[in-house]
Image 1 (spheres, helix red, strand yellow):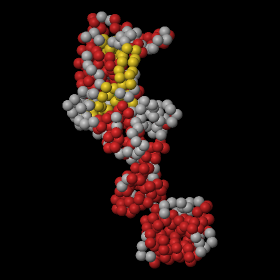
Image 2 (spheres, rainbow, N blue to C red):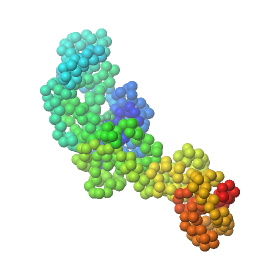
Image 3 (tube, helix red, strand yellow):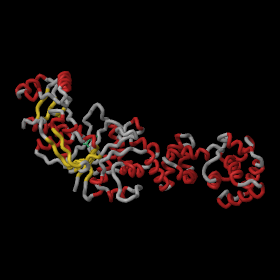
Image 4 (tube, rainbow, N blue to C red):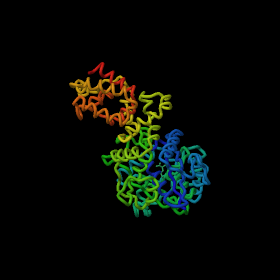
Length: 486
Ligand code: GLU
């Protein structure tokens, strides 16, 4: 009966790394029985959070097929699930710490804090708060509060303590409290909680049993554990997954390419490919097979099997996986996904997308196996749209000019005119006949035909092109080429 949570901050378009965190939570929850997944929106940075970024979180989670049982949109026994709506709850806990002498108001100005920082830098110790306001009496603090002096609240972190915890992925972690920066701000002067405070309160109140997140939070965990201690609460299990790196082995960022998961969706990566790929970042299936459905991954997933080494984001591998899933997908689905790209490229109108669906599906089937991502389709199918093309290159033009081509194309055209259908049977028959009648063979036969009906030297099988274009358009195209280029 574990309870895990994904707790993104809506301060930017949701990052691939966060999505992998969401996925690991999801896989963990689904791999057991009666587990619960909570989505908590950590929007306490009012300046940087936005409703639009929150919307993208839902959109991308839905796209990837990551479900949650409780959340801002779903409700649940522990609502509200948006931190900006939980400020009253946090108040209660600041007060408790203050009353128990475990936290205090701090009136230090930014200038004073800066001077302190420079001072500790000179002393070559790790930067830490001087503790100045720890020494204020209760009466002094109250006086300042009455005067309306801006105040933060700090939680006392005593030096010389060792915080120890057993990370499910990283193993035993020991951190000396001297390295934690001194007494930690838990409420900012704008009244909002800091991340470490609100995350701890919420994880406790929401009954979270497993905190699964990126290792960039590893340094926060001791601070959170000290808060659990101060409240007399039992901390959850922690599992910190290694950060995803770019090819240069620095933290994956925009410099390396797209980091917003939605950009991959927009380019035509399939969710099952992305899910499969993200699962393989830091986790390895037991067998050799890497192409696994979500159900197969869930069956095998164990947090303990998440690796400690940092994975490198490998676009070639993602592309390979995506191409595989595109090949496997129903053509109707790929056709549907392809529509926006074809419309945007001006190859079809929105109306044609509906009315010519059957034909568009036949077209998609021809190129489906060659797509790495769905958006690639526009380049592959361009040949099926413009009947007034120019041969693509000198080579294509030369092919048409070869001796005997005109005669051969004329024969082909009249055979098409006389045919009932330009299907497989027709094609093998006519290609054989042309060979016999003209003496032109192999490449010298197929290439000019290909250029005559598509303008290109390479492309899908001729028989597929023939049956997709149909009699009239083939005749029209051959005429066009005969009149202009042969
Ligand atoms: N809001 C934090 C983040 O997005 C959550 C970290 C956590 O899971 O505790 O990084």
